[in-house]
Image 1 (cartoon, rainbow, N blue to C red):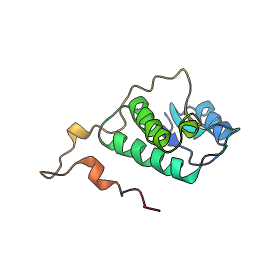
Image 2 (cartoon, rainbow, N blue to C red):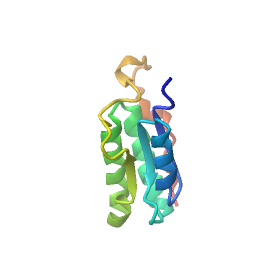
Image 3 (cartoon, helix red, strand yellow):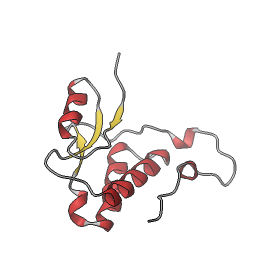
Amino acid sequence: QEPFTLVFVSACHSEYMGNAFVDAGVKHVVCCRYDEKIEDEAAIKFTHQFYVALAEGYTIQNAFEKGKNAARKYCVKEASNFLLLPFDGNHGVQVFHAEELEWDEGTSPAALIPPVPEH
């Protein structure tokens, strides 16, 4: 049986752990470069936008790019520290099929995700 479909390792220097999940059979792993630290603000912006995009039905690849773009607005260098493993994986798949869910009128999946805290 297939393990988890998606793992998000929310930690600095987590590439080795991310590779361990790939080796265990996880098809999609988000982590950070092993040799770089991620600033909290960039991590918050990336994570929020990534999960919003997944909830809206974007593919994992597109959600990852949206997350990187959000982090890039904070700091261009930070965006390159996020990784989607395996590098040669097919990440063009959805985790959530938002169009198949029933929502109250005027409600979107993104509304269920808490806003980014203000500092």
